[in-house]
Length: 119
Image (cartoon, helix red, strand yellow):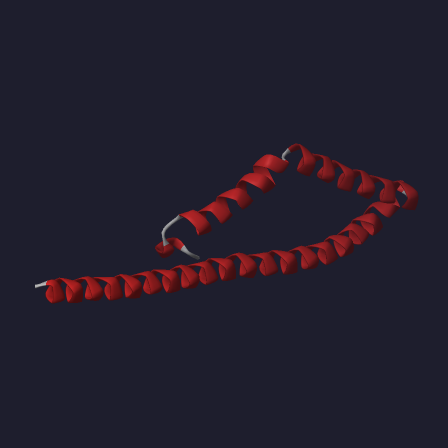
């Protein structure tokens, strides 16, 4: 009888070890998937940011040349610079709404929600 209990305990212990190993593997896979999504979105954001900066430079020069016949070259550069300063002010003013909250929502959605909701 003691031998039967010992075997049952040994089998239970082995099954517990297998279950724990499977849970660790699952946690590793889940973490890898979530980190991959976050890094992929970060790389995409950086690429879009770099391309947007390039487009912004070309568009700002186009705006300068468009305004030059109306106000002169110096004032056209001044107006475009003022527009950029206004945009910087708006970003700083609304940084929580436009930057911090969406980033926090995205990361918490990936890290805390079910695995079914990953993009």
